[in-house]
Image (cartoon, rainbow over all chains, first blue to last red; front, side, top):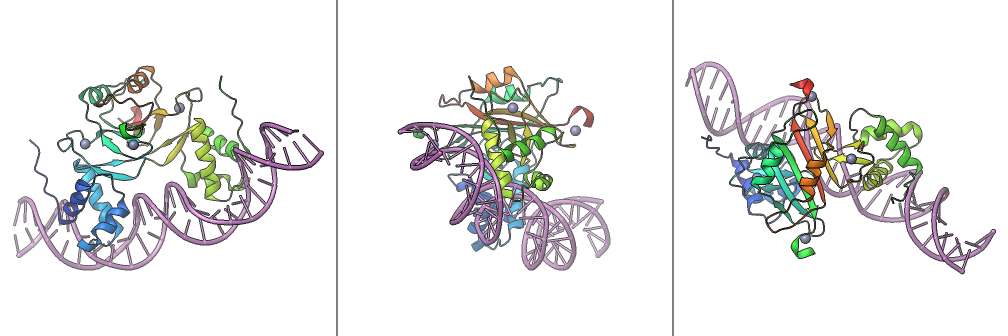
Length: 130
Length: 130
DNA sequence: TACATAATGTTATATTATAACAATAACTTT
DNA sequence: AAAGTTATTGTTATAATATAACATTATGTA
Ligand SMILES: [Zn+2]
Ligand SMILES: [Zn+2]
Ligand SMILES: [Zn+2]
Ligand SMILES: [Zn+2]
């Protein structure tokens, strides 16, 4: 069974903010929004983000330098993520597809090499923007 | 047929450097290495990089902020890229798999949405590092 | 308690990327 | 060739993203 992860003060503040945000947040946007709670320096934000990513509570959208809460039942697959990104409105959604993750987790390259960790970002137009 | 793309002076200088590099290069590493050729400012580098990415001559490794030349017969699939990244030695290889690109290009999410563009980064240990 | 580990606070700095504006070069159309 | 248009270049300044280094405090464990 998973060891119950309890969040530290800063981790909890920053996770709550990201979790209730309708869109991915950037580190300095987070910083600005938690200054009233006493978090004053970028490093405090980045440290909490690092831990939250490690725990699988949030994911980083690499092409956008932004962070989104995992809604995939706190990602068992913290290290195997897939997102869709709308190129017009920047709506970003975590894709939760057993088929996709199975395909990618079992994918073997030319050397027969398998990879348990991956990050996939799809780009296109969301429903609203088409 | 594809319009033959001819590179501008700066684009050619920067492409040549990336193309002959055994590893992905970062923007400021590129800048440092082309200063002897008269390219003095970050913006000159970033502008050339943008165009080269557009043309599919190079790709950006998003999780590393680094650029690698496409060796996939100058990527017909400039907008559908996949890489493997060794977490120890940072060896990075473009994956060229018809099966993978077919699977991802035809992948439909829960809303039945298809995406023609994607970027996939696999993480693991390369042969040498295992 | 005593020890070890994780989290925090703080200042400074490194790294990555773009804004704004002016000047040239290259390509089109007449 | 002339005139108009677009792509590329040059330059300075600045914005945005991220980490180094060091001191302190809190938490967990033997
Ligand atoms: Zn997730
Ligand atoms: Zn949209
Ligand atoms: Zn390619
Ligand atoms: Zn390796």
